[in-house]
Image (cartoon, rainbow, N blue to C red; front, side, top):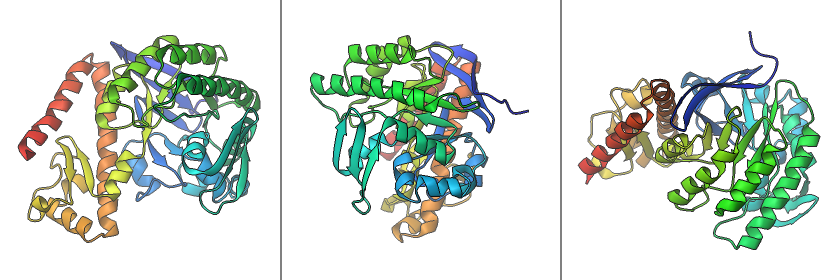
Length: 377
């Protein structure tokens, strides 16, 4: 029987790496979890049923894009995002803040919220913390994110601190607006740029709000991997053990393994779907650029040992042909392969943590990538 409320339980820990489960009325989320990104009510080039069959327990929807098209009120009239996109599992929606900062024209930020113009047609919009939560509710989101201000790095300390403190005030307003919604959750977002003391302070103050979960935002925006890991290490000790931790917008398989090793439970990234649409495949033997002429007569598949038909049943020559011909099927097959690999990576991580061999799993996985790169060289 599905639970009637939101819950999180840890099942095993190996060093800082954790495996557990988020329980919600629409289903469980096994952690560490990778959430395929369904920006505009679709995981690009995939059927919802395929995404589920690959092992994904939860997908991400984008508040900014969905509020612009088809619109939150229309989505509610149509029965909500789950029905709209034929996904019956949990959906996490971001707040729209990152897209407002990165995509919209003529944006203005003040204490009340953000005013901006749509990148589609220039229409003016206002987004307050309360409106962000309202939109996510109209979409029918199961896990809703607070509105925050995300600063591009590098930035001056004064700018980073100002955004961090504004995000904390907005978190309190989002918590009030969210109220009590049985079976659903609102997560706060730790900000603080690349400054460890601000990250720690942001985390401590968010924890005082007693939210259902906590995200680390404002990373994976071009900073070196070492900086990202340092920010996680500065934040994680201040987050409660009994609540999920979500690293937003991350990342490469190597990023994910490193973040899991530092205690992170949830991830999302457009990388596997975007790469698939541009001819790049992720495999246990490293990345494969199917645009490369070396594959024009390669009869071997991407990975004969994979359970995913896209990786196992089609030759690299055929995939190369589809990519070079700009055929839609090439994008579909490579996206399918990439999401399968990401879900297999997470399943392997969960099993390794349960068995107390996560460090070995990371080493073996990285050795597989390295062998392929050496062979290619």
